[in-house]
Length: 318
Image (tube, rainbow, N blue to C red; front, side):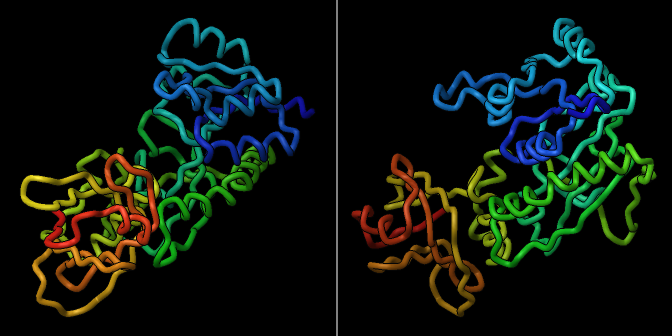
């Protein structure tokens, strides 16, 4: 086991786990892990994947609800970290990120300074970008504004969903953390201030709200709707209301679609059903549903979903 540096790892998602495992495989000295408290809502998923890994590998953990709680901060200082590494976690107060001698580095899933915020993977696809990236940087008192250490540009495929892009980024995340850490230790990386081109306006990635997930069929183009659906798939998921008539409707989540550019005379939001296809009319054609979930039922492929719909005529979405 390497004695230097003493590392505190901070993360709480499956995305975090890739970097944590890579550090462990390389025998880095992880003296402690900070992760989210156990969930009180789902008994089957109370422990985060990061916590499970910590327990299995006998690594000390802290799960603070309050990041400035004196008991938590006291125990954090006992770990005496040289450096902290964050991958997918909450905003840290200075009492935490300013604790280690060598600083706190963060891995962010965008090519900074673009898409600062909580949901960079989702917003990059929602906004129709064809590339994104990974950035490691030193944390300071502004969210995602710290000095950049390393960056890697990643292509976004035309039909890629947020889930697929996240899986792609995961594969590079561990090596990015290792390269950054080794570059710091060997003094081969010179941190640089974040810069952006004035002609390219900054885009942000705030936390996604339920209203951000609703599809507005009449207001938006086929491209905007298509990008929103794949940018929110599989989570938190684009949704709409599916109406069987003016009084009876259900919430309808949409996970996977294809777009069909075609001239038609149907009203916007009209649902066309056959035994094997469900198409929704939009301005420039149709959105064809491949995978969806009607409220109260499981997520299904389109054939099974159609089989569960009893009313077949005059359906529409809004």
